[in-house]
Length: 196
Image (cartoon, rainbow, N blue to C red; front, side):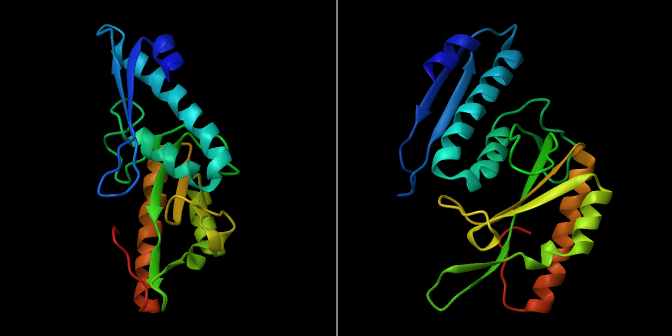
């Protein structure tokens, strides 16, 4: 991090103290120069994202898309369209999807608890052809990340990532997926959702 701080004229601090007995890490970045602050912060953020992506490639590649998205949401700038209804963000994750776009958004999956209290995530309804056609119509692509969907995860719950070339298409796709998930939940009758 000290190399990134030096190269970008920023101050970077890392706090890895657990919160509520859960391991967590906060990276704070402050520009030293007011005149070039946004430019310096953008460059520092991009470099930090690349560093974290390299780390995630080793320890939990499936969670990398979520990390890149959450890092992009963590600071203000032009990469966050204020009109976006899906919290779309311009994020750097070139290999999160087979056909990535510069904008991404993330959706949690509905789930049910099994007899041992583990979450079983529901996403098969999102893998049908009509969903893919709608994503394609909006210029978007989705990827379901989770142990049961061919993308193993160690550090986070299963999720869906949506990417597209334009944030408006990402917004439309996310709204479609939310409605489709509501329909699934109504038909299923077993699954829950925390943030839909």
